[in-house]
Length: 459
Image 1: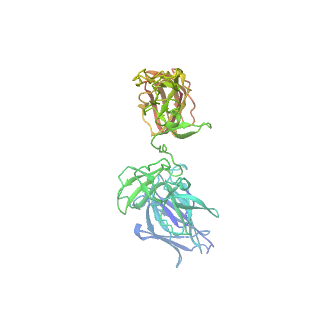
Image 2: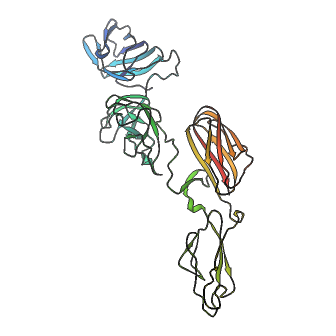
């Protein structure tokens, strides 16, 4: 937690020791009074070497609630800080500096977790400046759009604009233009309007700048970022647990007819499925009329002279099981598809099927992400449309561990011990027959999240 100029954190479960340092030192024996009317706190201490030490018992208040307070030196009111009541796991020590400029507060110097320095005792905040030209209201979701001196500047995040993502948190209070204030990246933000949301449902950055939504944005250009969870539904006293600041971590959207596929740089990209299915039409040529011929169209012969002379005709079009036009066979004998009486032969064209072995190899991959995984079977293809060969199986987690087994029907292809740095599996039983299912079986799950996988194949 970084220094927060005018907000002082007091524990709602344990004792807070507050060291108030006066600059400049007015001399020993100076009285310093700390008062928070709403919490019933009025304490006066005497300075020694310019420091007054306050021992403040636990306060009964809602976690992260805010209160007006004053710190007075002798008969002069020096500062009016905001007091925030936070939950801690043990006693904490904080430092407050008083000067002509007012109150400067720094985060807990010790404690806050029963002596465990790694325990988080309140929301994680950072200071940022609003340079948008308008006020950013409390609870608006923001991204970092630049820097002013050593202070980052923020603006409203927008899931539909990659330049305004990812979001880095929510405005902790109203932030006027050109002012510096707190942005919460982790923890509870309270007293916000959550009346339109459903309890315990995730919140996403929406395509309306600065607004949260419980509906995932649609469209391949929209980024998906789960940034928090609604923990209290209320019009003015709602509460949100902020969790997902700093990255867009959901599986990207995919437009209708597109698939995920690896590119030449071994990175995941998207492409239209139709661009991967080879030749799908035969153009108009000798012996054909009616424009381009597709696998769903009709092939019509040109009119042949009654005498039986004329150009050669197409004899057959061969189409594989994926609908690819693989070859066109011609008839070299002029007039072969015209009877002596000048009528068309009803069996003048054959649509056949060709083996996949005659087609060039098609390389592709199944890829995906499971945010919160469980010990069960995940089906990635219930029935492959054509035989194929598995070439690679890879999986890793964002956190936690599990075991992922790729199965080809009842056969094991490979096993990955999934960690945050797991590698590609050794594979066997790689030949997948047409209509076989491909599944991933998860076992030994230990709090695994954001598990991504890639199954590469050729056909």
